[in-house]
Length: 127
Picture: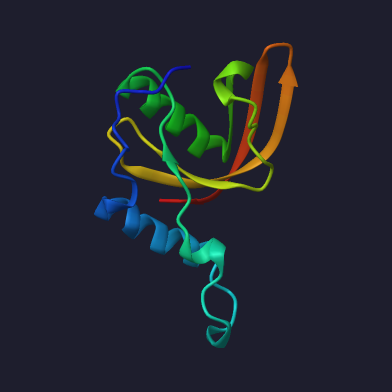
């Protein structure tokens, strides 16, 4: 699927994304290291934010489905990945069609089937 109409190019200059990330990393226990070690890379570098679908409505429906099942799946052409497939265990922030962050998700599985990549993920934290 192509990118939705949602513009997430500002990434973490967007206050709502920063606020969501602060809550999500706490609830997902990503900041569990004692303070004398300092922040970990995982804690201090926010994951990318994205929305799925060709329209706001499609993105909203996808988010509703993911939040109801606490898991999701996307399919895209292998060529869209430029040889860099998603890695299991990687976190990202799933946004709705308006660009509002709704869930912290983790890649659970990546499968290549012919000329398609199927990426499955689980919800780590949702708002």
